[in-house]
Image 1 (cartoon, rainbow, N blue to C red):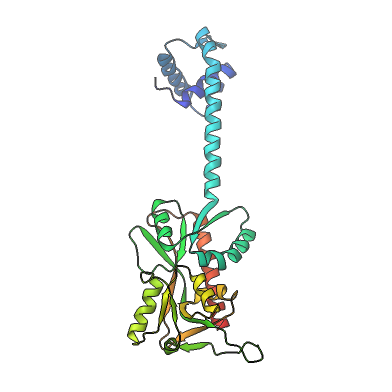
Image 2 (image 1 turned 90 degrees about the vertical axis):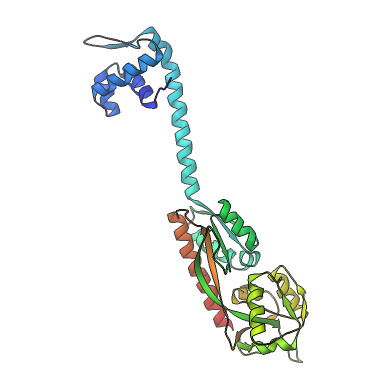
Length: 310
């Protein structure tokens, strides 16, 4: 049996209204079209459903027996389609945003508060993951948007640049004999790395690869103190006096929590691009576009703020 929802609606309309003419008007079909639908329905049911006279239409015994079932089926269908519509509407108002732990801790809380005030109906779920996990989540569709310094285009991944940051030197803040913090200039040269132990990220980390390439180009070989996975751990180690670090300037908001000095590295100034990534070929919703525009504004603010502080 291949009964359509439209046939069930036609049967119920005629049963309720007692008229083919009024039922056709209610369903916005011609009377001939309505008759064809019900004739096919009767064929599939295997019995006549209506007794028709010139003045009235009445259900047959078969029709009377079928009526409660049809009502129930249409009610279930309406509930199901209503739930689907509600879930679809809710899905359009949700987005999963993944970022590396440093960005999730130091940049996103302030942005999320401002975005939530401007767009209270939109729910943003934040996940703090490492770069590989973000890319894997984007590829699988579990994550809508990811944030990070993704240097090379990856298969199936679309990148949009949010901001460009210079590389900075993070070192322990010196103090005067009286205990006051000294004021320092905003810039430092790469040669400053020769005088202290360099705290670094793992060798396969894109940021560390960029740092190491620049050190080789300048023929610098500072002493090393192993590798740390977490940038915040590196900043804490610098504060404790275990060395200095070269990191992108997007660490400036996080550095504000520590007693460290941040200086832009020059001669040369080495830029690093920061991206929002999404699955290539996946149509961006109006929500995603709105969110990306907001993030771009936030990271430009962070970039400008970093320049102003150094």
